[in-house]
Image (tube, rainbow, N blue to C red; front, side):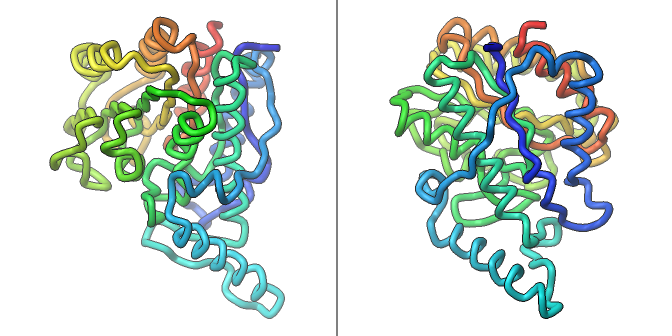
Amino acid sequence: MGKTGYFTHQDCRKHEMAPGHPECPDRLAAIHDRLLATGVADALEAVDVPLATLPQIIRAHDVAHIEHLEALSQRLVADAPAGGPDHAQLDPDTTLTRFTMLAARRAAGAAIAATDAVATGRLENAFCAVRPPGHHACRDKAMGFCFINNIAVAVRHAIEVHGIERAAVVDFDVHHGNGTEDILGNDERVLMVGIFQHPFYPYSGTEAPAANMLNLPVPAYTKGMDVRELIEAAWMPRLEAFKPQMIFVSAGFDAHWADELGQLRLNENDFAWITSRIVDVARRHAGGRIVSMLEGGYNLDALATSVEAHVRVLADL
């Protein structure tokens, strides 16, 4: 068995918010094609992805929030034969369709399955190529393309099922992971470190973050070397002091210079370097245990090459 798992599922491609929407099924196709073409896929262990159950999801979310989304979804399905609406607009950027909750439960299921495989030592680490993303999904609200917070579901599963006492979350998406902070803030079993463009959507992360949150807001057009210096100076000492037993990564690649949804100036080498520093901490304190979940990344070429760089480091290729 390979040491790096690759978790993905066709259901995650069924959710499509609108023609031309940047958070589209082609994102997963671009990643899959790149990993195949470069031979990286050959080094990965492909793993089946279950649907997350309601009890697993509500470790991170209010049950009423999930039941509301499921009821909306079921109404869309029921009304479809009569020519009813095929979507429900939750906010200007976030649309629920008949297939959204199937995809979201599959993405959260990948988070659960990857956590099980890594926590029990069947795999050293894992990358989940899933959508919709999750890190903007709050305890009781969908927003920012996100419906279920996959990382928060995974962290709570690791703590409550596998007895992990110290879990770290690393978020390098161009946008602040406000939903993850909303769910995991002030949980002493968790340390979250993040770097993100500011001021920028969702305009959070700078006002009195919880004590277990280390947020590094940076201005537009910040370059990779500056990001590396900040990570080395701020993230690394905090992670070393925390000594995480397992690390969870919100792997957003929209900080790439070619991505039009952000204005940071990172490249594939920067994502590889960030991943290498995460791996270093994991090997020292967590037996190498890392679960990485896809978040943002909307330029298909940049996304594919960045994921390749990230996974190459995870798989030690």
